[in-house]
Amino acid sequence: MTTGEEIRLGRLFDGGCNAVVVAVDHGLYNGPVPGLNDLAATLGRLDAADAILVSPGMASHVGHVFAHRGAPAMIVRLNWGTQYATQWQYHESRSVPVLSASEAVALGADIVLVGMSIKTGSEAVDAENVAVVARAVSEKRAAGVPLVGEVYPAGHEDLSPDERHEQIAVGCRVVAELGVDLVKTFHTGERFGEIVAATPVPVLALGSRKLPRERDALELAAEAVASGARGVVFGRNVIQARDPQKFLAALLAVVKDGVSADAAAERHGLNAAVAG
Image (tube, rainbow, N blue to C red):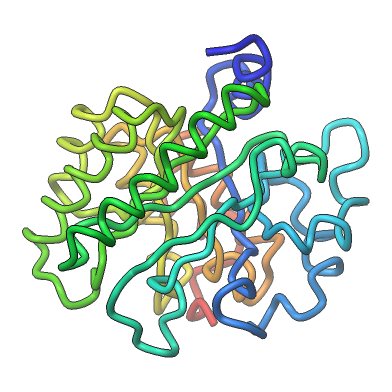
């Protein structure tokens, strides 16, 4: 790992603490999303997060959010994949690069992220998707910036819990073997600790779909951290909360301070309502 990578990772996990990342890159593959249409206004209320994941084209529109001492780290996504465009029910899970790590650093990125789907049903597509990750690893080393590998199983919503767990376990190890510095993936339930233990880089659990209650999202975060995750990456569960600032404060308490989901929800007035 280069000096630049070590410094930037040290900032994310300041003092060895777990990290809370807010993802707001949904527009890159889903188009307009409630809570993200005025992205600058949304992010202005979420600067307590440790990092914010943005798409490349949005970096220039929200740069002021990151341009002050103590601001969140900027994470920039490097690829686009059909697996993320869920509204169109694509099936091939093809991934393509959209910019290089050095180009992301020029935009202001402290960290970069690349997604990978394998077991797509096509050996050729799997190999192409792995090649996208491998190229990002080479580029991030040259740029001196940490790389998050996002493991996103092809057709994950149609898999049984056991199949999903096994695909994620394999995918996490594959991206670590390719050379990423962090992994972002789905929490798989009671066996998630097995994935964390077999992945030799820090694992961040993603929030995925909007959960029915805000307390449910806090419980997911608590379970992930209890299983060994070094933090979470939440998008809709934060930005579409009744009060995103309050929810983020509760999430920080759970992930960084070990507060229980019930206690955090009570403390921040989240028990009474659904997450939407």
